[in-house]
Image (cartoon, rainbow, N blue to C red):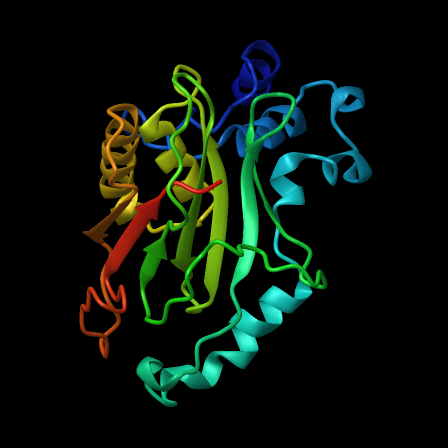
Amino acid sequence: MKVLMLTLQNDPPNLDTNAERKDQYKAYGKGFRSVIKDCLQKDPAKRPTAGELLKYSFFKKAKDKAFLVHSLIDNLGGVVGPTISNVNPKKVASGKLKKDKDGNWEFEYDDPDSDEDPAPTLKATEGLEKMTLTGPPQQPQSGGTMNLVLRVRNQQRELNDIKFDYTPGADTFQGIANELVTAELIDGADRVIVAANLQKLIELSQQHSDKKSLTFALNSKLHYNEIADERTLTGFAQLSLVE
């Protein structure tokens, strides 16, 4: 009876209700928190239906069946199969990290059937664990939005080009790095180093520096058969401004 009374009297639980320390679940984004909040409404009539839930940004970012097949079945033999260094480079998948009308960050992959080059200004690179932001020199206007691309190999060693914008005064370096981690686009161990180099690159641009690209080591662990190599960006990353 006590539990029933508390359920009726108290507010519904949220992601932080049973957290053991402050900011324990800080990395979870607004989209996921919105799902929990709406699904735990006390009044069943106010809870979203399954159809309505599919319109939430959290579920829109979910991977499809092909991703599960590739991750759970196709790569199963890789544990005892050939070393990663022998795997042929895969086609770059491009996408956009952007804010929706509610201010929430979303990542959308470009149409894989498109004949257009997803990042024609990017220089093709080879290697394993790496992140790349490349492009032609560009001098953004003071206070204007800056366009960047992040090239990163995911856990399946597929190359992804993550395009995103940075607007001084509206975005923060740490905030963008957090969203990249939340969307599982970069390793959590690389959050600080990515934010720091993003800040450094933006500051160089604002100082009208000719340096438009930065190469730096990652903090995430290499696979057991990988050797850090700056030339192939194995264990390294490169940031650049693009048009």
